[in-house]
Length: 116
Image (cartoon, rainbow, N blue to C red):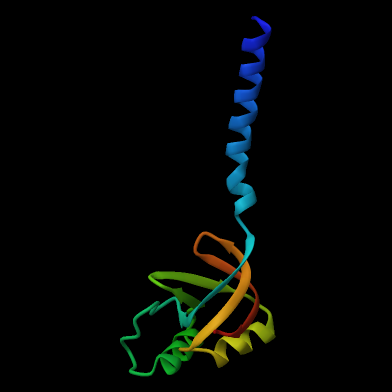
């Protein structure tokens, strides 16, 4: 194999390896998103109640996770942090800004504050 062809083969292999590992680095990347705090049972539409805050709190009480609705996308919010959970409860049905590690449609919540 000549030197140029060998170098091209090595370069192509390294490029493919880099592309294959890119999703692993992208997953869990900290991001800040602003949307409406909801729950995973209702998502963007609360049909059980005319009050989204009451509906969200009720669904969470019955086992649903909190969710963040950003445009037409619904993110499941994961956290065991008491402060973050209290903030999500406070902002149920309202706009909030959530910072956390995003993996697909799941956010591992680091902080929650009033949305702007």
